[in-house]
Amino acid sequence: VKIDLTQRPRAEEDPVVAAASILARAAFVDGIDALGKEIGFTLPKGASSLVVEAGRKLVQKEGRGVLERVAKLHFKTTQEILSI
Image (cartoon, rainbow, N blue to C red; front, side, top):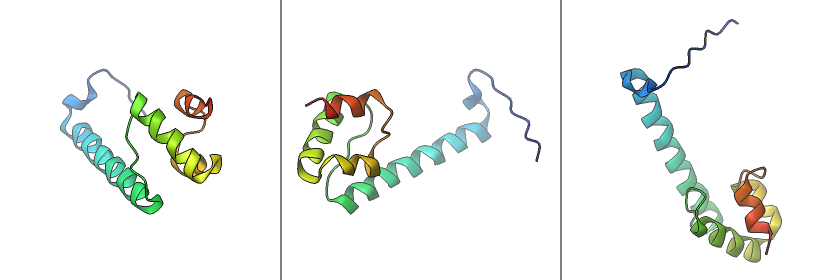
């Protein structure tokens, strides 16, 4: 299967790209909320100090292995969480 990929700045000016971006964000927000409910813990979004604090509390409660379910392990934020 051949796929033509076009990259350009400000692609959201195209209504199709803007709509896809909105749908992707909505799916992400719904997914992170559902995952938080599943594990019984609010999962803040982003890479702020609130995320690090929540991650550390979650690791204290559930152990390091929980990060495999809720975090991108190769991200700097995960390393900050684990550097207690």
